[in-house]
Length: 82
Image (cartoon, rainbow, N blue to C red):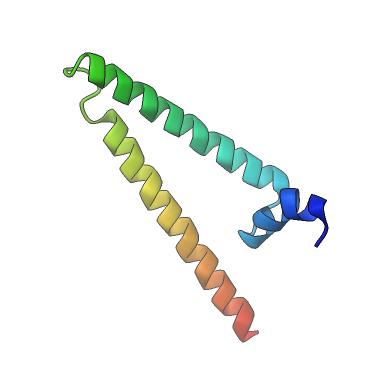
């Protein structure tokens, strides 16, 4: 595998996405993490604000990643049997 493929296309293809689909997902996910991070900092400074914002966001993202991985595993299993 050449360097370009290893750096830019191998992982997105492995998870069933194009480069740009994977980029969009990663940017959305990163934005959500940044908002959770800011909420956690706000909560650290003023405990009465954003009491559950960061933890709720993290739990939601965890569920989303678990669901995506389960779909990938299912697709890989189907591909192995065909």
